[in-house]
Image 1 (cartoon, helix red, strand yellow):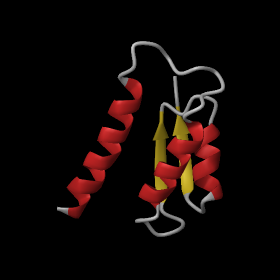
Image 2: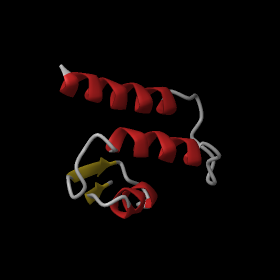
Image 3: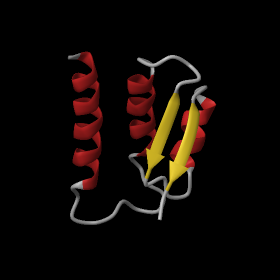
Length: 77
């Protein structure tokens, strides 16, 4: 039950963000808010847990996640 709730929260967060009709600007003003939300969601996991950042782009969020103490792998095409 808790695992499904966590998955649903991540899914809703990213679906809400990426359903825009245009891409986010280069210096995205929502980045601080997204980092705050991501940090809160990841707080449920132990430090050192493995995190996969799919669609990591330039790796900004991968670096952020690693700085929070997680082992992160970023993948993009």
